[in-house]
Image 1 (cartoon, rainbow, N blue to C red):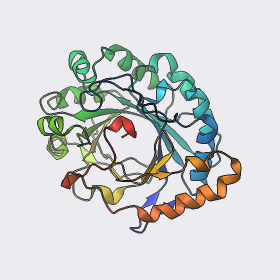
Image 2 (image 1 turned 135 degrees about the horizontal axis):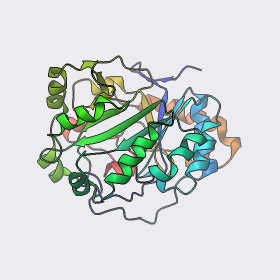
Image 3 (image 1 turned 90 degrees about the horizontal axis):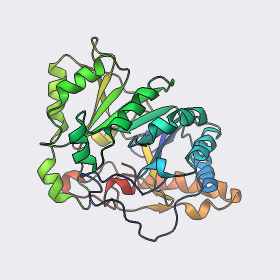
Image 4 (image 1 turned 30 degrees about the vertical axis):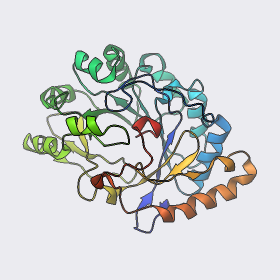
Length: 326
């Protein structure tokens, strides 16, 4: 079945599903004070996730990315992966993780059906990594990445949030890292959220500045796959790895949007920075509600806007990226 198409002609083969809002890091740009539970209803359970993914697969979704918070904090993560992998029509299952559990679990995730891996690695310097994340886990994360590269994943990608004065001078080190590794690093422009205005104003740097340096070093832009994320990806004949740029403040960024989001509590979000959520959880309690779930997904897509309001300082419902999975 063809993917969902909105009124602007954009198709949506890709769902980002948050499994939890909890995180075990204290990243300066997201949760500097750590995660604090709010006592609201529990996160989606396994049967609810199965019904949700079946519904999205029925309208053409073929790629699912498991996000958080930190999704590896879910004790039933392996069951979730195998359940999602068993849904007809789902061809790719990815996860975005901070990587602390990689050395112990990445082989089991691959066995359970995981096909792609994204790992947060904001710096190649262990001390800078500790300062940004609040944790001294650099050795475990990088060890896990090396393990993952030998497990046959479709892709292994590293995410680095660009921060002025903290990691925006590391491009030469990344070039060396990518020389012999089949991995993509994606530099993500810092985004303003509901609670980070002061930090944003101090550390925001435009991604295009880094992109100019990459182009000057001989890297060329690659074609974008239909179910790819938002990165503009670059390659170089002298390097095995690749570089991606995610620049949400760039012109026409939203024109290529191809993904929807569901929060850990079952709300459909049409945009990361949208100002409303569409409740789906009441339709995930029984297999008998399958047709109603599919109808709600398809009809609500008509509300998706042409673009976000970040340029106007509008951050919508998103207080921080851990709340919806970035």
